[in-house]
Image (cartoon, rainbow, N blue to C red; front, side):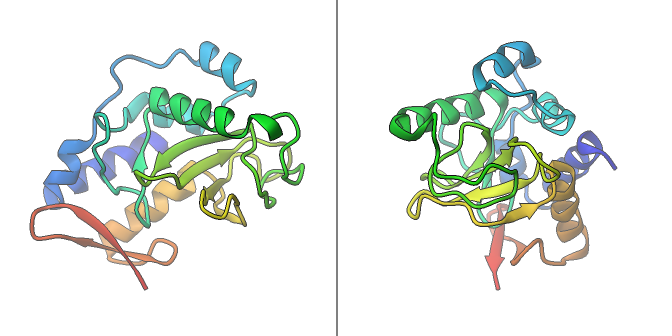
Length: 193
């Protein structure tokens, strides 16, 4: 399955099993202007990321919907751009020379301009798509704000991430180091084991 099919299947599962989480998700208000986004990000967006933002509009305001393990709410394109701009302000002194290795998937200890946020935890940690050059371009990293670092790729790409989430939801298997559960009030929750 591709990104659109996987997202659709995940949303369907959430609607049946975790309706409060499903209700928090929004479709995009309008199709994102990818030319404008690429101009601001100064990188070409991969097809997987474009597909995600065409079908996923994130959530309203500060509403959390932990769709992505272990506790991440997906961003729509405009939320991603806002988060990226916030990082640019925070990391102004190192924006042009981040403390990161050159190639995608390698560690870093300051935010890299080629990391595009795709989900957040409501505080400051995020999942980012790594658009630095190299064979792992497009991989998904976990940005840990408190430690100001990424360590290794969590998934090879958005399709792999969504496939892992879909498998976890439908089979009850782990996604990474997290297992899906549904709370009594109908929210998806990931338990770290």
